[in-house]
Image 1 (cartoon, rainbow, N blue to C red):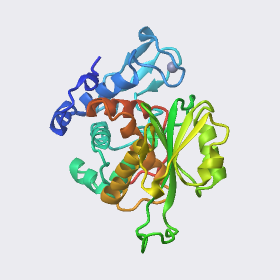
Image 2: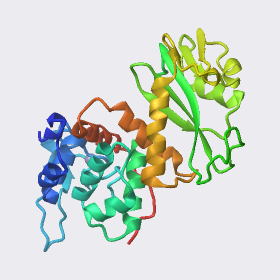
Image 3: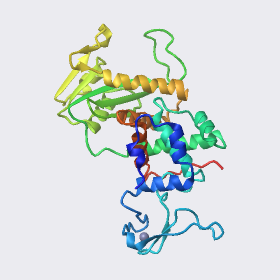
Length: 316
Ligand SMILES: [Zn+2]
């Protein structure tokens, strides 16, 4: 099974990635090893028996495309991209895999313009389309477990081009509120909220965090009521210059926010409210796999792309 990316060293370079996916056959073989770790599976009838699945030799003259398989059980044909974000894409799989790598390896993300240049894509819209599909695949479809232990919760405002005119001034309306939860020694989950209210904060916490947890927040008043029902709520009072009191701090989630903001400002310049959840999925993914190699982070991203087919209109 060719899944060497999983075992690549931390310093895997773009050049090595380009060589590894030099041809579409290489890229397809690699993708199949990620998508079908135990051999081909028919997406129509879920048949996974090697003895009743055959590979069909590609033949340009007969218009038989690469990677085609025949299922002996349901008698249908399939490829490894059916039901994934790559389905029906005319962008070579090779370029998709490199785009996944670039997305996973760049700390603050990669702009569509940069992606267009690096991959020699026909248009900016194609690059944007790829980026949105990648982000869509990184989006968690729902969590079957809630956070436990110590959970930091904080809110920030992202997007918009207008800065606060002076300290203490009202925030301009075009900033979008984001609430992030970070389990100490665990993962981060970020979401857009309509506005930061007791009700909304409470809903985010209830949905994601076990009542047995200890919640760490800053001194925003809304948290006092929003955290009722939790075992413990500890507050650091930023307004009097307090940033940590023993274990009581929100430094983890604030570190996450600073990277998110540098990404939004430095790389993406402007992010619309509609697309912000997708950017959050991207930043969450990188944060949650920050301690593994770029190659491994890419593999984890690719695994998430299964079952995420989405009809973004594809540029011609
Ligand atoms: Zn079948």
